[in-house]
Length: 203
Image (cartoon, rainbow, N blue to C red):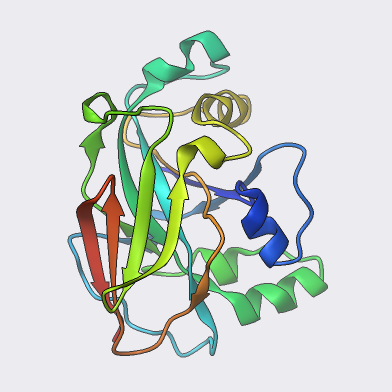
């Protein structure tokens, strides 16, 4: 299984971090060991002093495909959830300054929280999917798939030009504005169209 992540897919998030609006999808990957499922806690790593949360819609690939055309892209994903892309922002800043890859800051163990999946067909507005995340009971991020720079079908087409998509692969589709630092003792909960799909305590 592969975990694809899309950076800077919401204009306001790119702006809040001082990044340029991308002309094509920004893609990076996480290993399977990054997954944190079943409402398990996240243990704050010693190598960073600035871990930040990034709530995202996550697609699950439904069948294998390569060089997928836009008109067929919708056939390759049928389930969606909310997750967190944890980022060691201090490490990322240092790596970016040196022009180095982001893996140490993005792909570490437990850095990809994953919620319970829902059928996209079961949602009322399949092209305007709302999601949110709470910290200790208060909203910290809200987003909607209608606001992404690169729509889901575009991501499927783009990624499949470089990588064979396989059943069970995941795509973290980018985070909206409002990212922030986490702290030990906090509890995060993710919601898809108002339904809670995960919780994660920081330890």
